[in-house]
Amino acid sequence: MTRYILDTNVVMRFCNPSDIQHHLATEAISRLLAQGDECLESKHIFPNWLNLVTTNKVMGKRTHDVRIVAVKIQF
Image (cartoon, rainbow, N blue to C red; front, side, top):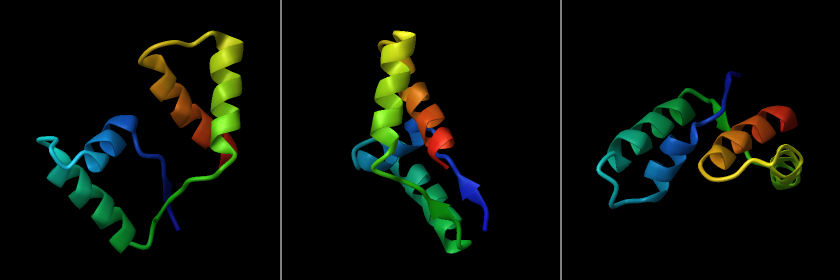
């Protein structure tokens, strides 16, 4: 099984039905899931993210990228 980390932009568009690219994000995620792939989430991601943001003094939009790193660390 292949594992994917979704970029924050894909997740944001997927979660916002009024986004102009919502359908595209939904279709992309649906295709990945139809292939038997997993979209991973864990309750341990937030503490990893918080530690990274605090330790490295990350602020603003960069915190979204740090979440991707936190997911990668977890899995």
